[in-house]
Image (cartoon, rainbow, N blue to C red):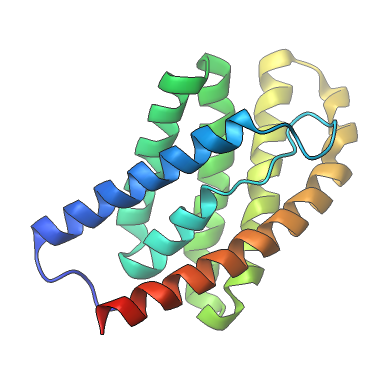
Length: 171
């Protein structure tokens, strides 16, 4: 973990900045067309910020950044169902990140990210089955697992490079 901010004000400021960045990335990504014509498949670029917050600030702070981003993104670009899907998927991914960042070295953050992305997709799939009451949606599970692995590796690598750059700036 990086050296934490020196004061509560610095920590709060960094959390606010990371939340704003995550929300901006989410809103930008919401404007992009889906890379494939399958419901639920997206890049998940805002997760770069969640991973960064977890490694720079800690689990609790990353959870707060994620929760505020989910609430604000549902307010600005979503609906009640968007909030449910994002909250369940985000919670699944967050819990996986909490466990794996303690077990997997930081230089393998892309592994943590890939597994968390699959967990996110599984959570969203469970939520969608619950909301629309259509168990046949499980047919999307293999596609969502593969897309989660691919996008998770990408977001994990991006988070690794962002964390390295931020640490260099601090020196």
